[in-house]
Image (cartoon, rainbow, N blue to C red):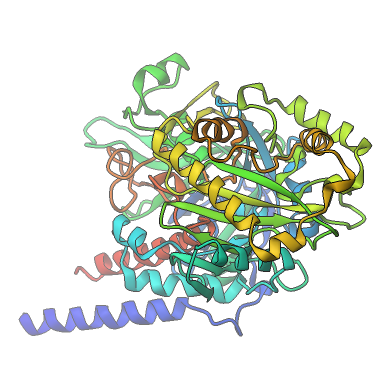
Amino acid sequence: MAALSRRAVFLFKVLACLCFFGFSQGKKQFTLRNLPPLQKASSFPTARPGAYDYIIVGGGTAGCPLAATLSLKYKVLLLERGGSPYGNRNISYMENFHIGLMNMAPDSPAQVFVSTDGVINARARVLGGGTCINAGFYSRASSSFVQEVGWDEDLVNKSFPWVEEKIVQWPKIAPWQAALRDGLIQAGVSPFNGYTYDHISGTKVGGTIFDETGYRHTAADLLASGDPNNLRVLLHASVHKIVFNSRQGRLKPRAIGVQFADENGRLHQAFLNNNRDSEIIISAGAIGSPQLLLLSGIGPKNDLKNHNIPVVLHNKYVGKGMADNPMNSIFIPTKSPPRQSLIETVGITEAGVFIEASSGFGQSSESVHCHHGIMSAEIGQLSTIPPKQRTLEAAQKYAHTKLNLPKEVFQGGFILEKIDGPRSTGHLVLTDTDVRNNPAVTFNYFSHPEDLNRCVYGIKTIERILKTNLFSELAANVAGFSMERVLNMSVQANVNLIPKHTNDTESLEQFCKDTVITIWHYHGGCHVGKVVDQHYRVLGVSGLRVVDGSIFSKSPGTNPQATVMMMGRYMGVKILRERLGRAAGI
């Protein structure tokens, strides 16, 4: 018996290794020709639809690599509420970056929401999720983050390259980004760590999901690594709720299926097969995942009853602990128009502040010719209006009136500072029972004094950078304009210049509060130990997990997309290994 047991363990280890390396595909073998068919949700059969080993809700940053990995061994249904990123130039090309975010149509790739704090924000509504509408910067989580969340470091270090070899490039660094790099080093944010994906204190150039032509590669591309025979992808499939089996005598409610609407509003149901290891995995993002749990009857019972939602499980923590990394920006007018760049260089300070930059704007035939790229009012970055006074109407007003401003107002770049791991947190609650509508989200920006202290540190760091040699050479000579006119133009164009009194901490704190914006790194709502366990299984029910940024109490790295894509791959491999182990009786 002992010999047989040892043999079984040995065979399992061999199987696990073969399984993992079989799933890994090198860059030479990776091609989008292997993408599974992307079908409309209305194509789902109403009669005898079949059953699945895994149903994944949300084809986003985590959901796509997760679905691809699981499909290599099992039958997977991936449900995405948005459409395809392919063929949409406003997603695919960096020069049109802002257009995808400013599109407010009901089926646009970005769904705008305004937090109760007044900060205008966006959530993805497209296959590939946030990787289709973000600034493209790729940087891994720190090693301390990996340790804190309890991940297997060996598997993490295999899962990151799986993503990188398929969709990540090194940027051809833009002059504005080179200026930031040199300015950071001269300002004391050192050492310079070169080109690296790793999260290291100092200054570095990170990766990008834009290639040398400005074409965006997204998490949707990773679906090409799956088995198209096992993977069904439905677009415009809005999941209304998880279906549970709560029959009498069952210790826990079990998730057995989902109810979703297609692009025509017709309702469908999809179910798991009868295997006890089959699961529904929610990967709908930090807004969508807690929202779906609430709509499915998992959450604070009184809140559920207020919306006439049958209570499946009382859990007061669903939707709690929401956080967003607050960001503030400074505009620097330049002598000549800078080349467009989003995020390529970052300063990682010991004080828990990240310094980044963006510049220029797209000049394609489809682009808007007068805007500030990542800081455009059109996408809700109303940094010269205090948060409580911001509205979507105010953003539209800026778009209409700024055409009367001199073109020099749009000639320049931004330096951004943002807070790592904000201590200020908020919550998410339903406003109604329509999954297409945004819940009410509160982030409580700068409610914790430590966050304000760090913002002040960030603004002072930017001031030091602006005094360095290269930025002094780049900055425009505004002698032709009075300072009053420059300040007035900057307000009309919705940009902030460096505050006049940087030695006055109180006025800088007010500046931070009044000019706070987002860089779309919100997280939380389904925290480990409160809503899900260490394996991200939803507490109190069976057959249900959450795999996305909603489980984080802190956003990983300087920009989270690298880690969230890695997590999709990581959890896929981990689930497969565990399932193989159970099948072998080990």
